[in-house]
Amino acid sequence: MPLSIQSLDEANAREIVEWRYDAPYDFYNLNPNEIEQNIHYFLDPQNKFYGIFEEPKEFVGYCSFGEDGQVPGGDYSTPGLDIGMGICPNFTGQGRGHCYVAAVLDFAQQMFAPPLVRVTIAAFNQRALLVWYGVGFHTVDTFEHQYQGVPFVILIREADCASKDCGKSLMVT
Image (cartoon, rainbow, N blue to C red; front, top):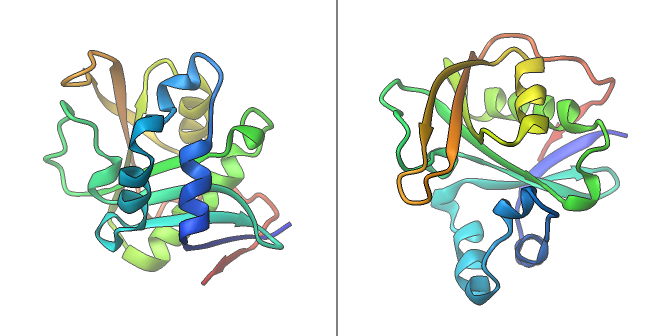
């Protein structure tokens, strides 16, 4: 089934704020008292959020490009494109992560042509770390979140490095 990456709309943003992950991934649950603020944040074009869809039009996750992918306390002095990503809880842990990541990386290359791509992942999130390592990323730094004290890992990859082929085509719309 092909993947497409498109701008988020309000319905997608409202769906994201309702996502609830089981522990330990509940760290990623958004505050239910800040629904409208979060929706506004997702829809602000400056934050460069996009939806990830399995055709035909099944919303499975989102990605962002730029400062949203940075975590307070990390060293982002090396120029690169930061990527943030979230997958609907119904689609996590099913072995699809490498395909979603490959699609996001292809989209990033087409839209932004960065020389370097970077992700910052909570150290406890071994599933995500394995996926990103599996598409050629390597650790360059570890740190604790400036306000929450949670350990994070910064990974990078040269942007032109070939990603794994998932047998899925990407449609950029």
